[in-house]
Length: 146
Image 1 (tube, rainbow, N blue to C red):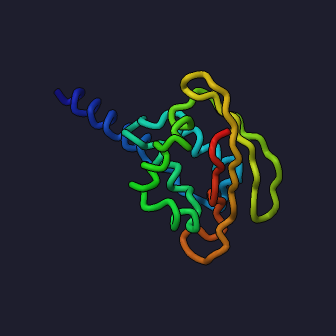
Image 2 (spheres, rainbow, N blue to C red):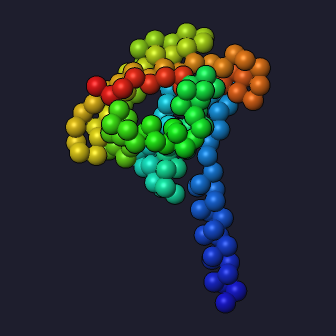
C-alpha cells in the first residue's frame, strides 16, 4: 500500500509539473516565444482541455489582450474559422523575416491536422511599459491563416 501511495504521489506531482504554464521572461528570445506557443497549440488539449490556447494567451502582448481578452474570449477566437487550423496542427516551421531590438517579424508554415499546408505572419514585440512583462517578448498580432 505504501508503494502505491508513493506511486500516485509521484504521478500527481509529475502531472502538476507538466501542467504549469510557461510565463514571459526577458530571457526568452523572439523565436522561442513563438515556439512555446506553437508547440502548445500543436497538442492543445494536453495535459488538459485548451491548455495550448491558455499557454498562447500567457504570451499575448498586453495591448493584444485589450482586444482579444479575457481568456474566455481568446479561446472562442482561436476556435473561429480564422485560427482553428492552428489548433492541433501536425507540424510547424518558424521562418525569421526580420528582427530589431524591439520587434520581430516571422512567417509561420503549418501542416494542419488534415494535411493542408498553410502560412501566416506572426509578430512579437518587447513590452516597454514598466510592469510584470517589462522587456519580455510577447505577441501583439498574428495574421489570419493563408
